[in-house]
Length: 358
Image (cartoon, rainbow, N blue to C red; front, side, top):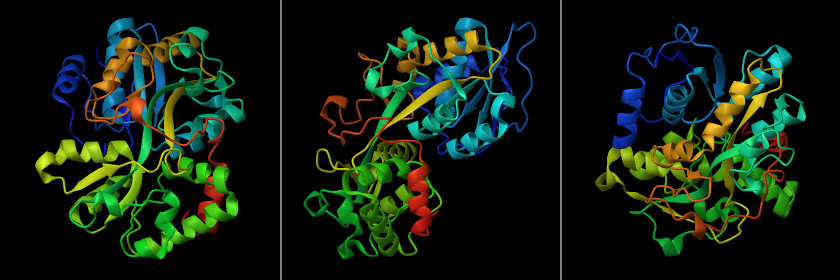
């Protein structure tokens, strides 16, 4: 089935696992090139076409869309970009948005859209497919997958015994010239919110200023650069979502990895579980089809696609195991933040601006 895809930014990695690559190749036979900059209608004879605003990993989303199209006959046009860009566009478009579904990397953008009454209720059966704590408290978006923040460190420079137990320690002078980060990446915002919840805004602001001082010139535009700098030894340590390290490992091979992943102390405010999720736009004219798409994302088939993709995230549907390379989900001990606690992302943006990092 031909599928129109509009890609607004390059994928972080061009690699897929062998199994996922085969599935995508079969599903995308005859599809438009992924680098196309324009979107068109679905295949001839298609009853309807969904428009998906995608802030998640593009290759995994493409695999999910291909399988959904094959199962339902519903065509999906995908527009991929950073979740912050897509959220701003949706807020600007309001009820005039052409989007039917939004799929984000973190929960705050979905919370922000829900606050503006731009999302429609999700079917109860879809919400029930994943633990209630991973869904919108109001039922207007569903959790799909999860990841956690971890320390990544260069194994030539540091040993596990030298690593900090708390994210707050990264702002101490001992890490000056050794720490690197990408402050404009949206993945940092839930961490700032968690630290604020645990220690207050003044402490969170002081932490950001400490990170800025310690990073110096090691402030980068994206997390892919951060992880590469840690692996090459140009930076000794970083706080980052787990999947970036595993994606670099897939790209370079295990023998080329000079870095490792470590977890912070159980419950530390920097040890955050981020929830990726999806919602239906209240203005959508294809709500029934959009409900089917969300149901597919949390179905056993959809969750298996995520589990076997190069996203290296944790499927949220019970009984679906993540990649065996990841720390088992049952062994994670993140801060006790709910998606409501992680908020809408407005507060951490304010703190980043005050620290002159935004």
